[in-house]
Length: 180
Image (tube, rainbow, N blue to C red; front, side):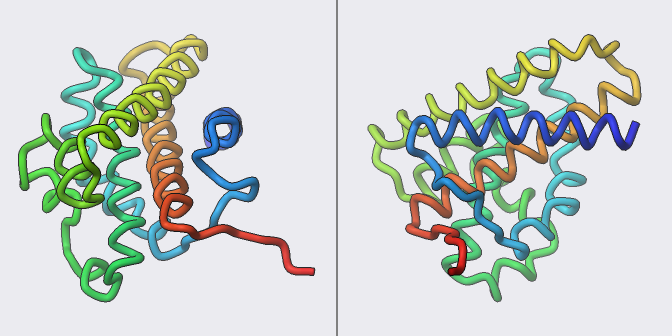
C-alpha cells in the first residue's frame, strides 16, 4: 500500500498544485518550508478524531479544514515560529478558539486577518480544492472503512495541508526560484 499511497499522493499533489497555478494562487515552483512540513504528523494525529467523525456527513469540510490549518501554520512560521513551534497541540489551539465548525472562519478572520470579501474568496478556493480532492478519492474505488481508504484520507489531508501552506506562503510573498 505504501507505493500505492505515494502514487496517490503524488497524483493528487500534481492535480491540486496545477489547479492553484492556473488560478494564480501559487508560484510556478512549489515552496519548501521544512519547519511547517515537520509539524504534519502532530497536526494530523490531533486532527484525525475530528476529521474522521465529520467526513461521513461533511466530507468537504473534513478535507478543506486541513487546507486552512496549513495556511495558519505558514502564517505562524512567518510571524513567530519560535513561539508557535513549541505549542504542544497547535491544532487544538486553533480548533478550540471557536470550535471545529468555525475553524475556517477563525483562521480566515482571526489568524490571517482577512475581511469578509477576502474570506469568502478563500472559502470558495478551499471548497474547490476539497471538492477536487473528494472527487479524486471517490474515483479510486476504495471500499469505505478499509486500510486503503483510511490511507487515502490521510494522504488527502496531507496534500491539502501542503496546499494551504503553499497558498499562504505565496500570499505572503515567498517564492522559490532556481539558482542560476
